[in-house]
Length: 113
Image (cartoon, rainbow, N blue to C red; front, side, top):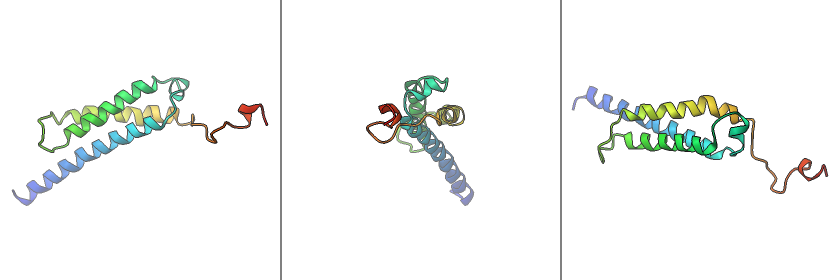
């Protein structure tokens, strides 16, 4: 293999690894969000987005050029679309809704005490 061919293989690997990491980031972010924030923000349910981002991460992983199992690598770009939609549209909409911290509830939930 020539130097140019190795460079192309390296860029190919970097591209597919970036797609996998991006999809995994979307999945991890979706897991961390409270379920009630999705309908409150006017978006589909958390389970729906977990399915989309989980499938995106799985397809992106299977698309890595590992040569272990034959898998159509172009599907990584389809998976990328699901991750992009979550990160660009859904994530900013559900961001204002955070988990409550403090364990036993805030003063407002205990009647102001």
